[in-house]
Picture (cartoon, rainbow, N blue to C red):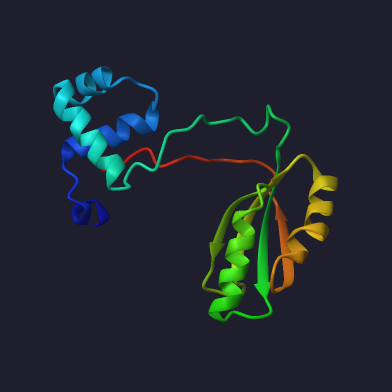
Length: 158
């Protein structure tokens, strides 16, 4: 298991679980919740950050309240899957803010993208003007989400 390879003990796992629920808590509050004093908690926290286990802290925004409630999943097939083409596609996708997630897939297509836009007409234009012009895109298939049943960030490392 990855946790074991990282050398995470129960205190490290507790720190990660608590911060996943509330990334704004003070080190003092975190120490109380995990049952350690402040200094060792702070040292562990710094090590988790330095080791790249904690990637950062951010505000979680509600896309629906921000008017970005149209979600589409897009299968992308590339015309070329050699390393240079994959790298070009990956680098281009990273720069597009409407693409929330991009995953290389082992299957009948090459990538699965999660795209968030304001509405169907905005998505339609985005598909034609942006996705279709990404490097090496040969074809796409779109699946529109009707409802998000579960969307979560990693909150438990046990």
